[in-house]
Amino acid sequence: MTATGDKAMLAKAEVLIEALPYFQRYAGRTFVVKYGGHAMGDPEAARDFAEDIVLLKAVGINPVVVHGGGPQIGAMLKKLDVESTFVDGLRVTDKATAEIAEMVLSGAINKELVGWITCAGGKAIGISGKDGGLVTAQKLSRTTRDPESNIEKVIDLGFVGEPAKVDTKIIDTAISAGMIPIIAPIGAGEDGHTYNINADTMAGAIAAALGASRLFLLTDVAGVLDKGGKLLTDLTPTDIEALGQDGTISGGMIPKLETCVKAVESGCEAAVVLDGRVPHAMLLEFFTARGAGTLVRGNS
Image (cartoon, rainbow, N blue to C red):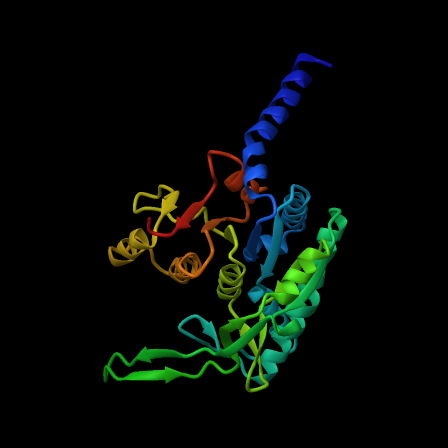
């Protein structure tokens, strides 16, 4: 072997040695991973993600994947000539839209992810929140304030829901059988209706119910940045509240961090927001001292 080859092998060995304490510490524990964003549309990124999930399973960690699919739902609605309307960034979901969302999420996207993990050598099972009573949904309630009259109005988003109850029995059964659960963010309500649920929200609720060691929210940004654009690597709920008040956190990052805070305050040990477009970002965050995103843990 050449000197260059020796150095490459040594570098690989050093990475394994650095990761060993993490393997040992979290063997048998559960990680919940929300997979979405633009990485879902990139076959190479999907392949990397599947390999990461299979590696976690191989070293004794139990990964549970919750996936999104907003862009894919939008594309299918356009293809079928079904118009969408949005209120404060949330899609109003009538019965036809709900049926299409379930078809896309529980069908094409879910089974594609199962296929990628199978190709990477894992055993995955695709389910939705409706299966085995995993997630009982309730209609999502939102209000808005009229800027002229200052009167608060209730927004009817249709069949958009949020988790009211999580029963992890089907996940526990799948994990015991050596399977990797791949979950579509669809839930059934006690009223018999099917509800589309935000994937971040669903992942957070499942992570809390499982008492997961980690909740990973893979997104399209590096994590939480300060006003100078520097990555903030460690935050608590108190920190997040202050950053929201001074305007450092805004836009789409607000609901993601709300999900993280709710998860860590309800049973999940820690949550991480990181860039899913970076190859193997999840492994870099967890199995190295350097980290790769923003870690949120409870107030000490």
